[in-house]
Image (cartoon, rainbow, N blue to C red; front, top):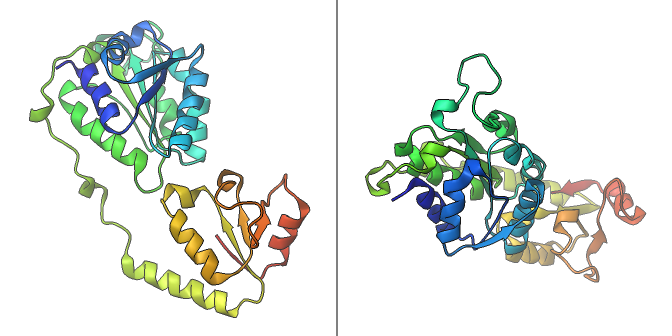
Length: 280
């Protein structure tokens, strides 16, 4: 199969149903594969809109968001949306076109060789969980599986896959390629250490006279809404919400104390200032 078809199919299998994009020549094979897929395409007038819509889609659907952009300004225009996804820990995948491998600047010392060439991976590396340019078609299965795993696991966030034009068109057999094993990322959290931290938290709660809970989007990202409601009911202490957690608790809940911060009702900030134990 064509590599671009495989990339699109990976995104579809990850649960994505809508893709946000601005087509371009540097992503022509990716665009063609999207057009032939079962995915619904949302065409934007600017890549910033695609990136921000991609993040909003992930938040609204409680799933993965996807955006496809072209070479050069197609990628750089999307950076603001990537930064938003990074700061809010939103699971998103960005796929960009890139100039042919023969036209990559490499170590030539010049800043650009191919048409609209920009080293987008270096630009987004600090605001993504995983970012790389696919230079070997035989590695696409490994990198797609790893990127999609990282986007939605642990603390979620954006990932970026950059695909040169000739790599997009390459013929591959994914079944013969090496896959990604999550065990490569190391051991999961130490359960004994987690139990110690929980016990310590309970001791602090028992000692405190004015404890308060501060809950936010991490509850949703961890699929912990049910446990959250149970804990609130058992503790019976005031609850504050962050702006991204605004819908975790109704405003008329008897324990709801507001949303603290630089722009907030005074009561919520007073609640924080007067508490002797803040649990977040």
